[in-house]
Every structure is written in structure tokens, then in C-alpha cells.
Image (cartoon, rainbow, N blue to C red; front, side, top):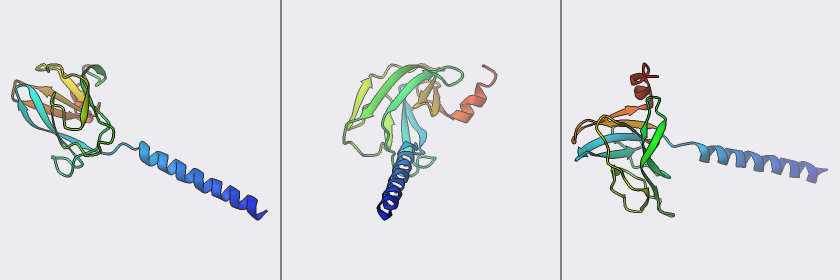
Length: 150
């Protein structure tokens, strides 16, 4: 009888540990994107744990830049990269189209166009304005900007 209770209790503990681990792994880390420069129509971004390019870089499993429609839905990937297996350094600075050390390019960077809206991993949105300027939008800002377009 004591063995049955002990086995059932051990199974419950194992299930609770597995569920907890799954929930912790499934949670997306909060990160922030800042446009720190634009040169020749290529934005350079800072990826950090805190807004305003503060804190350390962030470990991402991929970076996807896509064109988006007015609702923010991805239309076409214009650049896609991912880290090499075993590369566990956080990504801090990245220039569009320039492959960071330890990363692999899945889709080469296509030229960016003025006035077109792009997303980075579907979380942040930006638009180029000339060869030296870009405007970054959070999802909420992007949604408000396009509220009348839907």
C-alpha cells in the first residue's frame, strides 16, 4: 500500500515538473528592438533585454524580416537567418543583410523599399524614409496607425 501511494506521488511530481518545464520553455523572452542607424537604406538594429538598447543581447532562434500588409500579416520574407547549432551568444547588434558571426542565412536579403512596412519576427515593424532614416513601431503603434485601413 505504501509503495502504491509513493509511486502515485512520484508520478504526480514528475508530471508537475514536466508541465512546469514545458511552460518555462514555451515562454518567449521579452526583448526590444531599436533602430540605431540607417546607411544606404540598410537599418542597423540593437536587440536588447530592455528598451532603449539597454541590457545584454538576446538569444533568438531566428530573425525573419518580412513585408507586411496593413493588418501586420506577413506577406513576403525579405531576409531570414538563424544561429548555427551550438551558437549560444546573445544577438545585440545586427545590420540588415549583414550576417552576424555564428549565424546562417536561410534567405538572402532583398533590397528594402521606401514607404514599405516590414516586420522583424512579427513583433516589431519599421518603415524606411530615404536612405538614412527609419521609423520603428511596436505592434500596438502599427495597429493604431493602420486602424482605418482595414
